[in-house]
Amino acid sequence: MGWTDSGRSADIQPAAKHIVVDEKIDEAVTGPLRSYLLPYVERLWEEGAAASAISPDVLLKLWALSEPRIEADYVLFDGAQDSDGVMLSVLGRQRHARIIYVGDPYQQIYEWRGAVNAMAQIDAPECALTESFRFSVAFAALASRLLTLLGERTPVRGQDAIGSIMVEDPALALPVDAILCRKNVTAIWQFAAGLEAGHRPAIRMSPAEILAYADGADRLLAGQRAFRPAAFSLFETWSDAQAFARSAFGQDLLPVGRIVDELGTGYLRVLAQRSAGAGAADYVISTVHRAKGLEWKRVKVANDFRLRGVDESPMPDDDELRLLYVAVTRAQHVLDISELRDELLRLFSLR
Image (cartoon, rainbow, N blue to C red; front, top):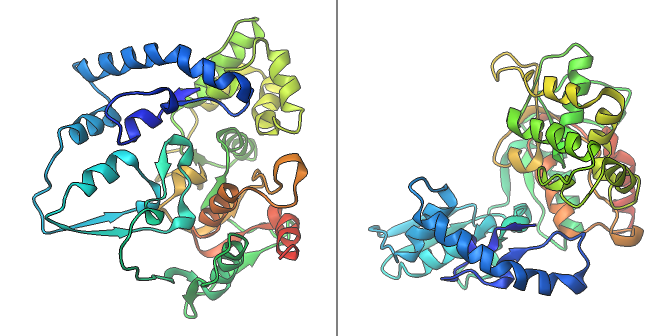
């Protein structure tokens, strides 16, 4: 669990509703759990706000609580689809200025950390920007089909002059500049696979983030609770983590579980030190969240998206479709969706 919504909301003080509880925890106990944790969250906020060195999130919240006035006639606020309550409260007080919100509601992918879709909360004239200068008509058509699944009727427009290749056959292995994954554990797996193949990949994760998986697995293997990374925090032993990874809800853990079981945590520690520098890498491996706002000439999308809903519902959740939409719109000239081809055909056949 984590405390994210309080610092990102417009509220002045922490409240029980701000405490984010992992979806794996039974809903029947989340209310009492939040109430129990609230005094500790209040103390955490007080200590964090008074510390000599504070995080950027705390600094932003303190700035918002000071009720700042932005000395400008116009404020252009980009990425509004992933704004949060604290920024909206600041902008809402700038009544002397004209606020221009720019964003794509279908690129809202940070709900899990308190982001809200400001585009749905603003009462103002709208101007649609539907033409992309990044990619071709073919990539725009794929993006538009995904948007149709989200209920959007206005298609994205691409550029006739941009050449493109859509790779749908797994046997056609073209070089790529980026591999985009849904989860950190898949990115680590792709990184390991690239190194074993003799490539020089870079991964958009810090060594400390990879080491956290090694440290957490070591603690679980020793029969101790692990509180980092968050993916391991609900287990008491490594056997518990293995059992969960084999379940329908825990398959996200399978890649890192296989590394630990087959190669050991020492292998993860070696991986943490082997990311190539950006200039020397053959390609970069990233989660979609960390790739947002970026682009590459040649992109491959990994097959770790949850393209079926809860209890094997044929349609995935909207947030999963938005994440996939962001992934496929990072490519300029080559887009490899070969690992997703069958699932995409199934989805498109439903509408």
